[in-house]
Image 1 (cartoon, helix red, strand yellow):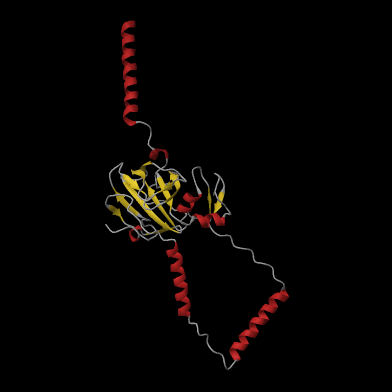
Image 2 (cartoon, rainbow, N blue to C red; image 1 turned 45 degrees about the horizontal axis):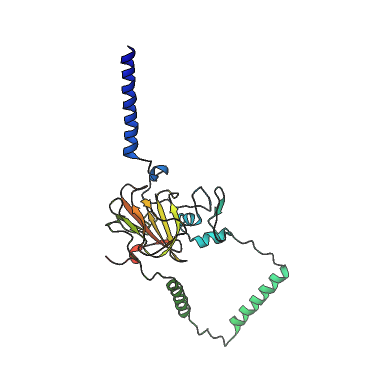
Length: 278
């Protein structure tokens, strides 16, 4: 009896061990995508509201990216200076605080109103009043030219496609639309930097993006690469255009794809307007 029991015990132990080690060798460690809660939405969730509580893994750039604003604006609102360090558990304002009205003495108010009334009467009753020569159309044109010059001053000279593959979902400016392009491909295929810049975020703290990389190209433009299988860069790293930064995957996505975005001053823009025609 003892021999039979010993034999049965040995067989059971050997089977159990083979199952455990067999599973370990076939599956390996848990993938990064299983460590974060996947979003049920088609596209990433937007941070809304007047303030946001910093969580572990957040950076100023990841929060500003999800809040659809520039990191410069977010740091200015919260008086955060370089190197832009933020701490878990603290609250950040997402809207500019209104300045309190300054107290003005009654006599100062009366003087201002008196001057305003006098100037209005002079214009109303003067017989030789002439309209200013400068038209509103000229003023608008100059304002438009200044805006264009400001835009072109920080324009990227050349963009390249971050991955090869078919675009399966185009950009949409609607409220619930796609903030970028979804490019289908094979798992493990190369993801390249669309332009030179600096990595300001590399992680998976933003729900809906999976393993995400954000590259800052200048004070105006950012590019983002989501759902990566593997990330080959780290934050603060300088990147050259065309450099390998990740492998395509399906972290927090229903299929293997690259979700690619270009942001101008924090706002999503259509990447097709910047990328070369295929």
